[in-house]
Image (cartoon, rainbow, N blue to C red; front, side, top):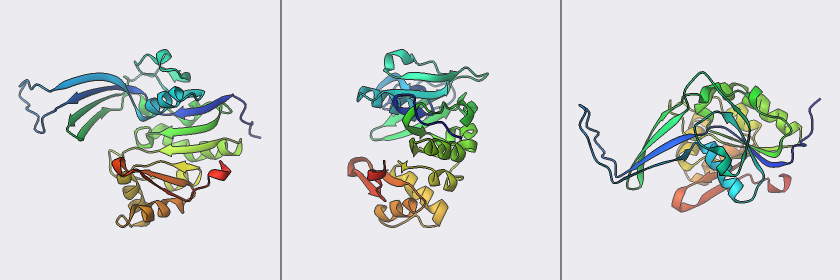
Amino acid sequence: MTAAVTGGFDLLVVGDANPDIVLTGAPRDLAYGQREQLVAGGDLVLGGSGAITACGAARLGLRTAFAGVSCSARWPSAGWTSPTASPTPSTTAMTVVLADGTDRAILTSPGCLPYLTAADVPRGLARHVHVSSYFLQPGLADGLPALLAELRAAGATTSLDTNDDPAGRWDGLADVLAATDVFLPNAGEARAIAARLSGVRDGPLEAVAARLGALGPAVVVKDGAAGGTAAQPTWDDL
C-alpha cells in the first residue's frame, strides 16, 4: 500500500546541483601547450538543472524541497530545503561553460551525480515532483519509471526535463514518459527524442510535440526566443 502525499511541500525537485564556472568571450579555438588566453569575463554560480529549478521555484514562493547528492554550493541561502544530500565517495559535479556570443560549449564532470538512486528520493513529501538531467544520473534513471508510477499512485503529479544526452543516444525514455504528467524538453531535445522513439525528427515543432504527447505526458517544448509549444494539455487533471 502506498502512502498519500502528506509532506506539505508544493514541489520536490530530484536531480543535479553543482557549481558552474561561466567564462564569457571564450575563444572558439582553445590553445593547448600551456598558452594563456584571456576571456572577457567569468563567474562562479550555482548550476545544475535541478538546483536552478529549485531556486527559481523558491523565489516564486513555492515551498520547495530538493533531493540529490552533495555539492559544494551553499544551499541555505537558496531558499529551499534539501531533505536528501548524501555525501558520496566521488567529487562534486562541476560544469565549465564557454560562452561565445549567443552560443555555448558545456563541459561537465559528472562527479557524484551517478550515485543518486530512486531509493534516495523521499516519498510523500510534495504534491508535485520534478526530475532533472535524466542522462547525467544513470543510477536514478534505472529506477525512474517505477518511482514516478509510485509517486503518481500516491497522489503526486510528476514532470521531467531530460536536458541533453552527452552520448547522443536518447535511450530509455518510453517507460519514463508513460509515468510522467508533464514533459519539458527544449526544441532540440524534443526532436532528438522523437526521432529515437518514432523515427521522425523533421517537421513542425507542434507535430514533434504531439508525437511525444502520444506516449502519455502533456508536452511543453521550450524554444528560446520563439516561446514554446504545448501538446496534449491535461491541465484540468493536474
